[in-house]
Every structure is written in structure tokens, then in C-alpha cells.
Image 1 (tube, rainbow, N blue to C red):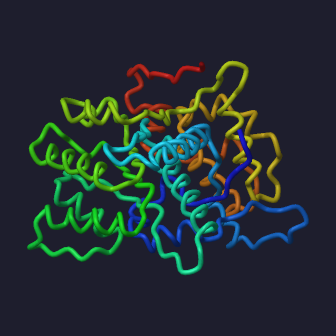
Image 2 (cartoon, rainbow, N blue to C red):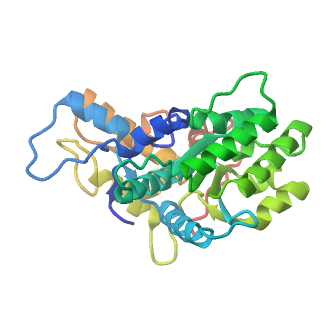
Image 3 (cartoon, helix red, strand yellow):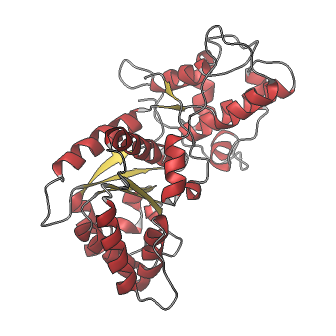
Length: 344
């Protein structure tokens, strides 16, 4: 596990906040929150509360894998013009870091382009789009248009919007397209099938690498039928699942806890106390990165507010987490058998 990479937002942050180019550019270039540094003067409680509400993002194995694959596929598809370029799908349960991984890769690509760009270069390296609920071809096209501020009226046809999107994205030099919430696409319905066909058409007309993310995509309707087979035949899968307690000789979840603890800004917290709670924290969060981050952030905020300035198991156990984590750890129906994540 590498050291924390301080880049907001977490998966709990509204991804919709970065679905225009200007907003994404601000996200990518805004100085991230930083952990306390040796010799630094103590920060005020207000600043520390704000820091823990944003906190750091740890470069997980999923982020590392996605970054490496995106870089390779962008090079692979650079001169491919006849068919759609190879793509990637990030899949996994909720709160396992999919959106965080997607945004981190987009941020890295945007900053790399900015560093290389000549003065006056106004090209757009990255597009980030959310699939709308009940997506149709026209609403999906509208989301792509909104990202680059392409004017769209209610009287415009899907074909007209598509032509504008393809022309503008190509002219703007978009090289990486990130599509989140892909599980909302349902090719089993007539409108969903049209949206899936529209997206396939877009990948063949816009010279960019496409990366999708969604909840348990392989178990959703996205991979069903002829349209699903076409997507599966072009996309590599990256599993962004819950972190195991052990993986061979390593303990990925304990390493993640240690990295998060290292980033805390608490005056009386004992270093090493959270990694010792790894078995409890893994059971408490089912190994989900989003749930773990939320638990530690909330505990840190509570510790500042009650002046204890340290995180203990008692404090952690008093915090109500997201429903998925709570139902795993404290099911409302005690007779229901809990399925624990594998330790391997």
C-alpha cells in the first residue's frame, strides 16, 4: 500500500458536482487537503474538522490497476480509427471506491495534459458523465452535451444532439471519457436498448478511450443479450471489490487502515491503535473502503468535538454507519445468517 494521495472527493461526495468541464477542471486543479506535517503549527479545531470532512484518498490496488490499464489503452488506441478502441469497466459492490478510482484517474490525466500543454491550448483531455436514471438515447446524449456546454433544445432530435456531441468532442480533443453509474443502463427495455446502441455508436465516432464504472456490472442487465456481448467483447474488467483481510502474505485491509491513521490530525491519538483493530474494522465495514473511510472520518470529527482527540473502539462502535455496513454487522433480524467476506 502506498502513502495516502490527498485528492478529494471520496465516493460519498456527489459525483454530479463534476459533470461539467469547468467543474471537473476545478476539481482536478484544486489543491487537495494535506495531512499534518512535522513541525507544522497546530491547526484550529475548525480547520481540522474541515480537513477530516474531506480527508485523503489512499491509492488502493484498484486505483493503481486502473491507472496502469488506462495509460496502456490510451497508447494502444491512439492510432486506431476503424473500430472502437478497447475500453475498461470498473465493477464492484456499493461503497468500494469505484467513483473515487474513476475520478482519480481522470484527475491524473487532466493534470498530465495541463503540464504538457502549450500556452493557449484549450483542448479538453477528460470528460466525466453520469448515466441518468432510466437513460434513453436522448437523455444520455444530453448529459454528454451538458459536460461541454453544447446548447441543446427540447426540439432537437437525438441525431442532431449526437452530431453536435461527436463534432465538439472530437474538435475539443477529448482523449478519455469516464462514464459512471453504467448499471443504470438497461438494454432489456426499448429505451435502454436505444441508449446502449447510442453509446456504442459514440465510441466508434469519438476518438477516445472509454472507461465505465457501475455497481456489480457483470450481474446487471448491461452485459445481457447481443448488446451486452458487444460491450463485454471490447471491455476489460477491473474488480473494485471489498478488500480482503489477507491476500497471501499481505494484509491489504490493515495496510489501508494504517495509511488512513497516518493521515489523522488528532492531538491525543495513539499511533498503531487502529491497525490493531483490523479484525473488528473488517467485520464492521465488510471490507468496503467507503464504509471504512466514513467510519474513521466520523470518529475523528467526534473526537475533536468531545475533546478526547483520539479514536477508540468504544467510539467507533457508537457510530452509525451506512445501512449496508450496519446490516452486515448488526442485522435487524438476528436470526438471519450473515455472510462474512472471505479472509483470503
